[in-house]
Image (cartoon, rainbow, N blue to C red; front, top):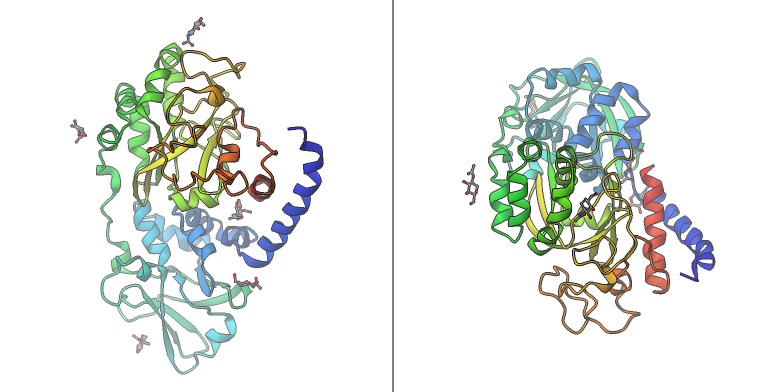
Length: 417
Ligand SMILES: *[C@@H]1O[C@H](CO)[C@@H](O)[C@H](O)[C@H]1NC(C)=O
Ligand SMILES: *[C@@H]1O[C@H](CO)[C@@H](O)[C@H](O)[C@H]1NC(C)=O
Ligand SMILES: *[C@@H]1O[C@H](CO)[C@@H](O)[C@H](O)[C@H]1NC(C)=O
Ligand SMILES: *[C@@H]1O[C@H](CO)[C@@H](O)[C@H](O)[C@H]1NC(C)=O
Ligand SMILES: *[C@@H]1O[C@H](CO)[C@@H](O)[C@H](O)[C@H]1NC(C)=O
């Protein structure tokens, strides 16, 4: 801790380096479209369907945006979020089509594979878009499984970053029977059954006893849900505190363990920052911070730092992960002094007698998913340097890796703003 002042300058430099790298190497479709309010609905649904991060990860890609009026044609039919995702993924071409290339299609046509095609759920030639030079200077766009007519045409180039991403406007949506087919939703998933069967029975039973919270989880399955379930030992020890909460507090505590978007493990490792939860009812309420440290991912409230110990279920749009502590939101719990309480007091991490703690390096715990880091050398194992961090503050005495992680998290924190 005594290194803090010296560190901040270094952190700034590192942050700036990362900032430079990130601005030159990555595109951000959300940010690009945000400059154009006529695409706000399209942009909103790219985020809601989680297509935005997939688009950002790809280079050589073309996004065929439609304006808000055209988006209403999709929404009027009230499709499920999964169907909207399929429909929009027809509008993302896995090739670079700038205005110039589009106009060079003259006298001909081209077929472009789409992100829908790449999902593997597009039968036959569905999932390709036919781009054809039509008479009168128009360039027509149609999903390959459309009826042979061109329901949409090129309007204008919105933004081009050759040859990474081209965003163009087309006049209307690209109907595709395959993409519009109702998708079997994950709502049939037996969430509490899955939890019970994999070490989170106490949490599942608590959820089942709270019909409001259970309904919130169940209703969120289709739109994308990530659940962080405390393992039985942690939840059992927490029950006295839980029983002390008001009825509304109990619901909020449970909902605090769900995040209304799908997050794969790799997304959790790369998307550090604030995360809203099912309990969030306003800006900066009932959120927590995801922070990875090497291969380890932690969830930090101002009261407690929990560690993800394993993946219980991961099928888009639902991810379920086990955590070693109950997440305690600051809205329900006051920060307590670190006392070696019998129940898992929020800040007892360093003194915890629990066998699952990483402290005992000689016996890496079996429930640690990434237990590939039993290395003794403090220089080689960044994970250990913050593993026993007990009050949400990053420990700086770990050297360069801690610094790097901190710089990165500061940067990511900024880019989230
Ligand atoms: C395009 O992407 C590549 C690879 O990510 C990157 O090196 C390059 O700087 C990007 N170009 C622009 C103009 O952003
Ligand atoms: C992309 O931009 C949006 C809006 O500016 C921002 O909220 C989001 O965090 C950015 N995503 C990434 C990966 O930087
Ligand atoms: C695109 O569609 C038109 C009209 O249906 C068809 O004539 C053309 O062959 C198609 N192009 C390709 C590359 O499939
Ligand atoms: C969910 O799974 C549990 C445990 O396997 C079972 O008892 C329960 O009946 C299931 N619920 C539904 C709705 O299928
Ligand atoms: C429950 O609440 C009472 C009264 O506020 C308090 O004295 C007690 O310590 C609490 N118990 C737990 C386990 O938090």
